Length: 81
Image (cartoon, rainbow, N blue to C red; front, side, top):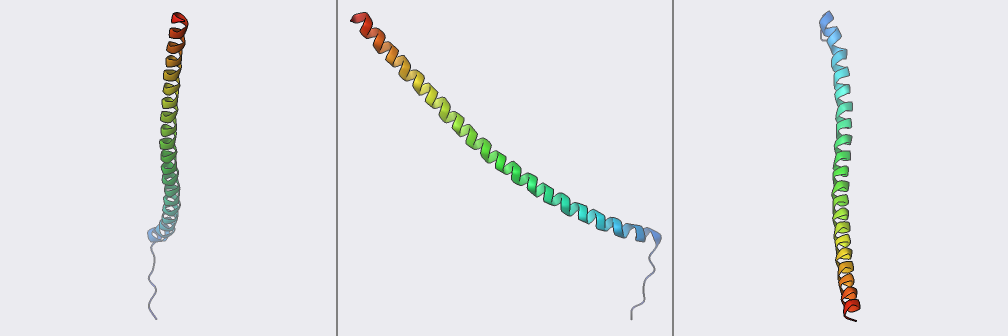
C-alpha cells in the first residue's frame, strides 16, 4: 500500500481553487460558444436585411423612372393634343 503524502496548507488551499477555476473556465467557454453562435446568426440576418433593402431601393428607383416616363408621355400628349 502506497504511503500517503502530507499536503501543506498552501496545497490544501490551491486544490479547491484549481477545481473552481476549471469549472469557471468550462462555464465561460460555453458562454463564449453561445455568443459566437449568436453573433454568426446576426451577421447572416444583417446580410439578408442589406439585400432586402437593396432590392427595395431598386424597386423604388424603377417606380420613379416609370412614373417619370408616364408623366413625360402624358405631358407630351396633352401639350400636342
